[in-house]
Image (tube, rainbow, N blue to C red; front, side, top):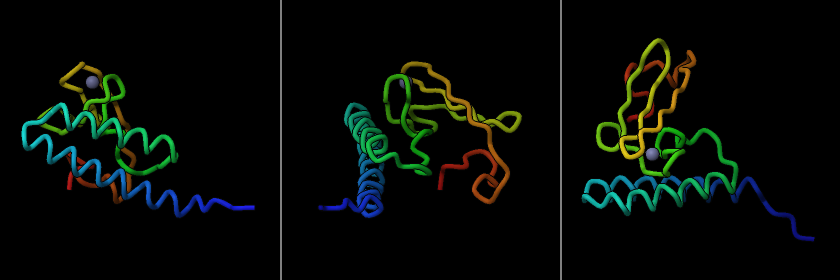
Length: 114
Ligand SMILES: [Zn+2]
């Protein structure tokens, strides 16, 4: 019997998602929004298939139209009353995230941005 090493598969999937996000950002910089959205869709598919968590992909991919969300370019991000409100500029879908206290969310404004 062959046991699947899910931990290892997830590591590979995680890298793939990170790569796809990189590609999406590059595509966006090159003005290829269609490609960026395509990469975003692929990244989202990998994420859901492997049930990956903690990738911050929720704020990078629109749940309404699967567009790649780049704050200031294809999405608008505002932090209000402890919530991060991300609006997709393609379809207008709004996503609200309650910012929990902790080192990851200590930064003001754009917690997911480097
Ligand atoms: Zn959208």
